[in-house]
Amino acid sequence: MLKQNVRRLTTLGLLIALDVVLTRFFSYMLPGNLDRISLQFLPHSLGGMLFGPIYAAISCIAGDILGMLINSAGLSFSPLITLSAGIRGLIYGFILYKKPVTLLRCIVAACVVTAVVDLGLNPIWMKIMYGQGYLAILTAKIPVRLIYGPVAGLVMYPVLKRTSEAIDKKS
Image 1 (cartoon, rainbow, N blue to C red):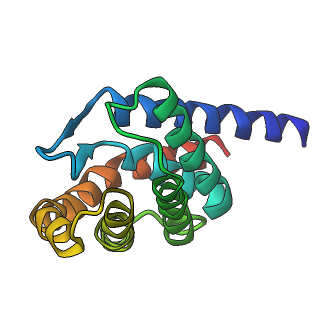
Image 2 (cartoon, one colour; image 1 turned 180 degrees about the vertical axis):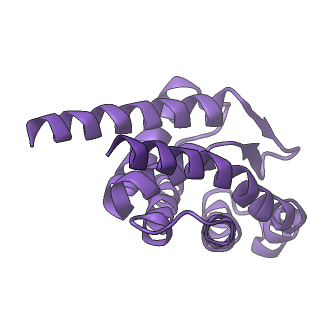
């Protein structure tokens, strides 16, 4: 039992570190600071697949807070955006945990996260925080996110599939 908890904690720590690096250092902020393109979906989806919604949510929240402490990229900390990170982990966990890894499931997971968090909650939070018009933010995000969601699922699939196969082989 202790060995399993140490392994879980270590893996979650690595996923949090990967989240920080991919989100804060290997990303592209679109003009106007309305959206960021990154590979952060990889550690988030891996956390959801490996540990379920609760642990994935906690690791996404920890990654967001730690990332803001390390490199805020000139943005201000917002508990609302951190809440979005937690919801992102919950969604990945609910869709991916203890389920077969398929291309369709990965695309659905990425598109649900995109719809609920990136196009649903985050524009509302940005309106609250910065007073920007909701429709203006949403209109700016939609073209990028319509492409980003399915592409994230396509990129996610081989990573999750190989990870799942490696775990099955080890068991």
